[in-house]
Amino acid sequence: MASLGTEDAIAFGVACDLTYTVFGATNSSPQTTELFAGDRAPTLMKYVKLGAAQSAVLIGVMAFRAASNGGGWARAFWPAFGGVLTGTMMWLMYAHALEAGKAQAAPAAGRR
Image (cartoon, rainbow, N blue to C red; front, side):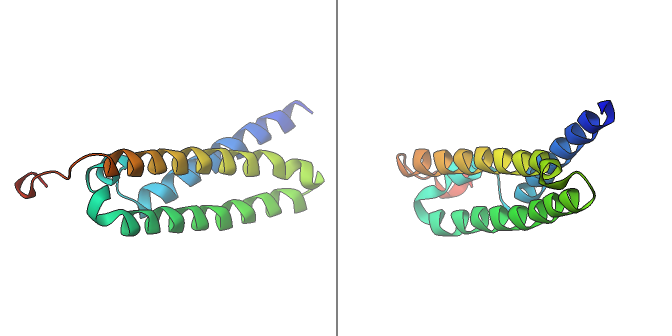
């Protein structure tokens, strides 16, 4: 039973890392989102949505595989929880950056 906790911890960590990696691969930084929110908001958020969708599919596969490998759906909890938690934190961070950026003037053209 002790190894089950270790496996759950590993599944949680891998799911979190996978979600961060997908967002990193599909999005510019939240700082860039904040700087250019005024004129590029739809494009910036399009990639946040694509990152979220890709993460959901990959975490779904991971959770399904965990459940079908013995232990039932209880084994799927940690990868699903890790992915949902990390995806939510990333979404909120980009949403905050977008709103903060809309509230301020865009940077001068020479400073991009």
